[in-house]
Image 1 (cartoon, rainbow, N blue to C red):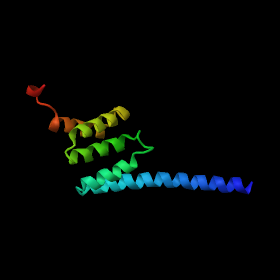
Image 2: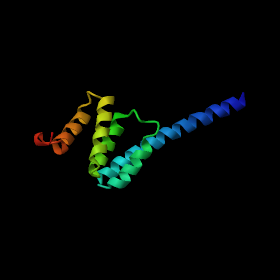
Image 3: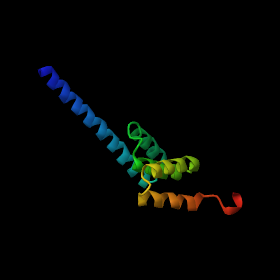
Image 4: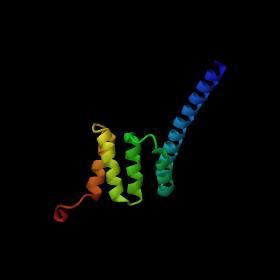
Length: 110
């Protein structure tokens, strides 16, 4: 019985650590991006992805970082992932529309 309780406590603590790590990397990446430290922000955001690939906010913020690094095709893919996960999110759709206005193809290029 004691062994089961100890194992349960350990599992709960480990689960808590995993969630905390994601939030820390995600939040730290956002802080770095706001400071224009795009490469480090990308590294931190990529560390936050495993196990959280269904987060629209993560894909949106990753797109912004990739945009800051001028990695535009990758940024567009991340915006599309974010939009697919949260099609009614006005913040994400606003970012993606701005991206398309700034970097979309001209009518002559189509």
